[in-house]
Amino acid sequence: MTSSTETNAQLTLFTVGTDSTRSAIPPWERIPVHRWDREALQRWYEGYSSPEISKKIGYAPKTVLNRLCILRQMYGTDLVPKNPQRWKRIREIGTGGCA
Image (cartoon, rainbow, N blue to C red; front, side, top):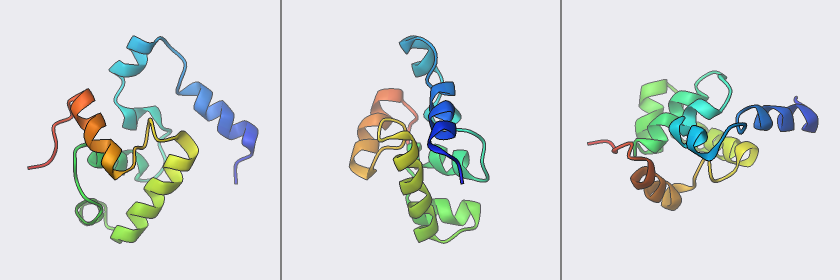
């Protein structure tokens, strides 16, 4: 379990830089490497659904949604958008979307 101070330090670590620097870094690379978090978030931004992500990483769809929810609580909706918000973010950053 991380303390509030450790979590704030992690958030600070990944938000340092100018606005142009931050926008050049894909959102999934702004979170620490931990298990399959980055892969799930990247696929979320690419437009994959939780069942599609779950097939790729080998966890249940509900597990994927729960982890995305936890990441959203840790890093906010700017970094881990809710489903309706992510389509706007996908268009903004141009990650495409799945076919």
